[in-house]
Image (tube, rainbow, N blue to C red; front, side, top):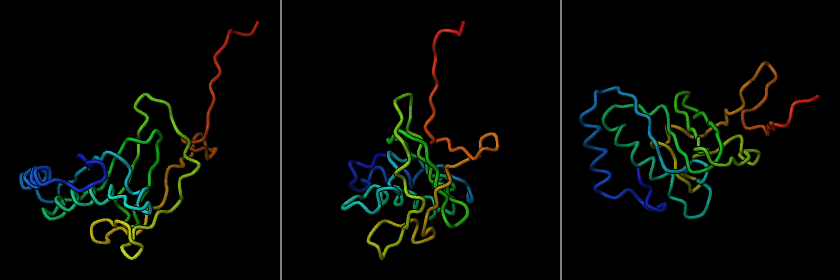
Length: 157
């Protein structure tokens, strides 16, 4: 979908998603791909990015479909947040062969509440997101976002 520089969903784009949703079976699962992780920008002044993704998700919800995964790129790191509904996952995977940014600054919890003045997911079906990107690797509890170095040099004599 096109977030149109954080504006709103234009009518032709909305009509397109509504038309596709009408052709899908009830209880279908949809992976919604957005241009950026708007759920991380909800507290920024005038950010409408998450609202654009939410608007398209309503097209699926109105046609009795579920959106278990919301996927974005744009930012150069991997992170995953789980919604408090126990179903919805919000994933950022924006490396795309480019350099990677650190994730140490990401919040462990993101609140999605209308009373806070930010966007919220499908009328409040998800009220908070909890960061889930730390995955045990070899039982060491390492994070895939932990800085890693690979040194390549000549073989030791």
